[in-house]
Image (cartoon, rainbow, N blue to C red; front, side):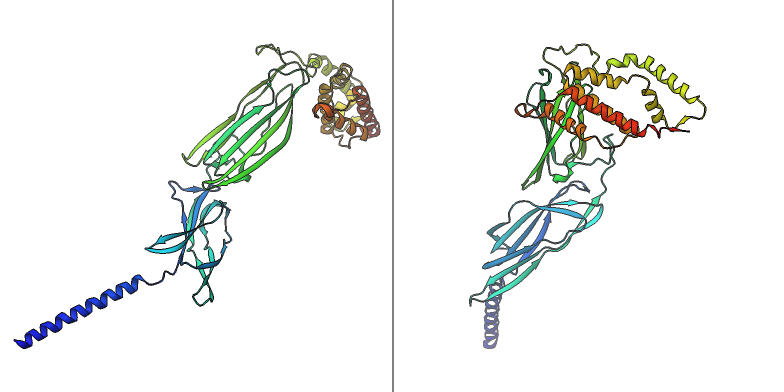
Length: 430
């Protein structure tokens, strides 16, 4: 009996000892120092990622305290562009029940190709101060993260050209410095359109769209591009500017411009619209009939002039031993013996003092000459006259120079005649 009591007491004492030993081991495990962790956390995706579509990632680190120096090194991305979104954040926080130094950096990734791409490891080098004053260096690397990227969808915008503008939001605003349908004769109107895209790299924003209309002169001014970084990604902006002038008293219509884009949140193709705009002089009714302009009045003479040109060319072609080299040369030959309607418009505009009509006719004449093979450089006095003409029309009022329109037309036509005379001997082949 005494022996049994002694054995029971021994077992009791052993259990007590074992319990105490186990408690000390648990406490020791809880006090083990935290080694640190660096990880890459992509945002959750509800649909496959497309080429050039933005992916937000967070690089998060949890490190032991007493950091005295740090160096963060982003890797070289293969098949993707990237952009850091703001400054790094440091804060003391809790991780697995221990107080640690928390680190976070946000970045935007833009895949440039389809297939599987890999976000390579990031390296964070930290220097710690020990109790003895000695410094030690520790390096933390994140694990690589694979990302599957789908090819961009087929162009369903109807515009062609491989359009693709993936954005999380798009807004368009426009402004005029004066009512475009209430212009004074010769007045200039300035149109500005701003396109703002969220979650888009700046280089993906489209170039300045065309802005043309019959009877309206439009000149593209330098565009303005900018972007700002937010935690939700970059916000990119482009502002397009045009200087617009009504060339005649007849109203003109600037057609609408459609800008398609892909909404990455709803996964749908959408459109932003630069609206149609009427350009007219003050006092002209919206339903006023279209009157013939200085450029189109000569169209009534197209038939008789065409018959005359055809007759002259036919008579020349039947002459023995002579022939023309090309259609352009035949037209040039015929114009030597028939009035040129475009030159008539140019001279009438100069006599009327209409600088805008002179400019339009002059550029049309130069363009036609080049299309017919007259690619010689402009004479210096003609080039200077064109520059002065542009300044007289589009420079600020205080800086507009005066210009002699008749002298400019004389110089232009004299230069054309000299070029024609120099090349006339080559026009006809014996």
